[in-house]
Image 1 (cartoon, rainbow, N blue to C red):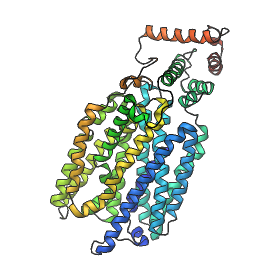
Image 2: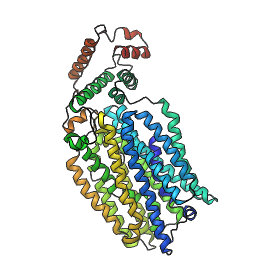
Image 3: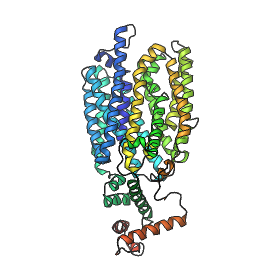
Image 4: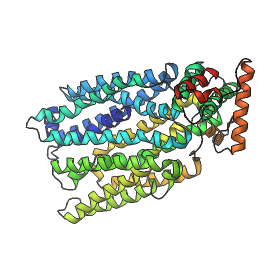
Length: 515
């Protein structure tokens, strides 16, 4: 639901600016013949996008502090409350100034969600399926995109002009309300609990997350608990308290910050924001208002399907390979270049085959971007930072993501109206350059636990539990048991005899008590 909140908040405006009734109520126009008013309208639309991104930058930086200080769960609750306020203000806006201010508030909440959700899921997911599970973040905010698009299509045909745009905006209140309803059923992140000295609560969470009725000793939960506590102790001994400046001046942290910045900037520099406003592009290609909205909704729905696909094979394909391959950012650059050629040659014509080809290229683009990049960027950035700086690192990632949107969103309307198809070539050039830089900078993280990823950036890995042989796994399990016995001379070394006569629930309680 948190992912849907972000997706709906971010995307709904792309449909709203395709509804003539909204322009009329806000005193704006789409008519180029009204030169002064048209220029003012372009500036206001640019401000809408820019203020949302500005609010998101502040939200990302704020959540980097809050979720470390008060936990992932409380931060999600606050994000939901702020989101409800922002959505209500947008739906009730009476002039463009109020609407722009409300977008700033909503952007603040949206960035909190987009940072928090992958942090939380990464910290509770096992290594083998972390890509799939964290990948649901990208998939579900595309679901939010789809809901925003189709609600706008449906309300467009209402006979009440204000309903056409107020209803889709009011649905921004629904998704965070659901977050508040269901959040009580979620546990706190075990890694955050351990980092704040609440090891008993953390073990309870891990024991329930990884409970296996076939394994009375719950070896996987034990190993992960041992790895997390040992790694956090090692990190604390090595780095102590990490300040914001340390993130940039300590080489191991600075490399992570650089990798995150490259990945997030490239995701915006490739043209997805430009093509995301598909309703405007379709109008530019000669389609009517209603057809443009329908095509936009279909486009987003297909993107949602491809995001789920991306999550499903990410653990096999790998994170960086998915971004670097010719079907990732590089392929997107090719699609944007071809789209520019079609717009340059046929954008103002009535050549239906050419216009259809232009729309088809947009769908080909989102197939590659959503299928290999859109989900991957959040998975990668949530993995590369160690637990004690993960919130700050993810906040940095989302801040770069949102900061990167501002120049592109602010200039898109003006760019198309002044230099036309040439505006596409900016994104083609940036995508190619950034893909090359990424190839030489970002290490692959698939299959490793969050603690083991530290080794890719030159940090010490205190305990390895991934890809061990059976003999190594048995030795590690024995070492964990011996460590526990040293801490508690009265602990029993027999984890199996009595458990055979116990129910699964009793077995779990027994193991929890022993640990």
